[in-house]
Length: 364
Image (cartoon, rainbow, N blue to C red):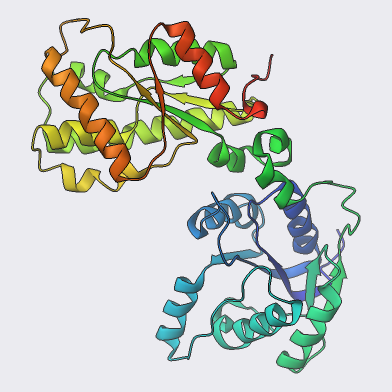
């Protein structure tokens, strides 16, 4: 095995999202360094690429796979908190489209003033696949008071011919350039909403078949049956949390199978509806969970009466749930597709609302 050339290395990027080209760069740098610090920042953050998400991707795909890698995704709030703890005056993060010099000097300040504790030694090498590398290394060399080498890795991007901007423009078309853990986070999710007996489960099954994917059943119904129809505030919060966990598990399975979309029978928003309509004290704890985002919210019209299966309440309750859901979507500024009538028409409406790259399943 070839010994590492550098004691401390550095990789910097937006990682919005973290794709296999980024992972290749990090892997090459990790092999060449005793210690590697990976820094990810974006101002503004790209849709679907929050700091916490980018940190989870870097942890799963870099830090946990390479023992010598320390990965940090940060934003202005994170830097401000760190500066406050260190007694430093904070600098604003440059915008993504700012000139190279602004980013280079901000990075020099960050490394020399804010992130010293994250470094095993002064960085000796900057690894990147971009032409700005040598100029950035010169700025960092001057700030550190010692030479820093720019190491360019696969400038032609022959190993992974992709860019994050292309992925953001058409995620489903470029899913093969993302690790399953990352694609599972980005996987478009269709959620079905409304009251009891509004055809959500039937539509979920039909959509999953049409899209060659999985659908996530409503955990609350299963839990209601297990608890003999007696649910307290703690049960409602557990239902929301378990629904999300099951959804994330299904998303990872679909991502590993090369799928392009996931269908969800319900979301924590529905659980919040039960809590608020029943004046449950669980409502306050459920409200943050109800903000969980989906690629497409589908509101199912309860236009065929109430099919009583022994677990449902009466028609007025169903109508109240539907009205509550309409109001909740409007209050939260969540766009939605309203579907009515027979299942075939509902399926067609949902398929038409999806992006073309999301419509066919992996076996279509």
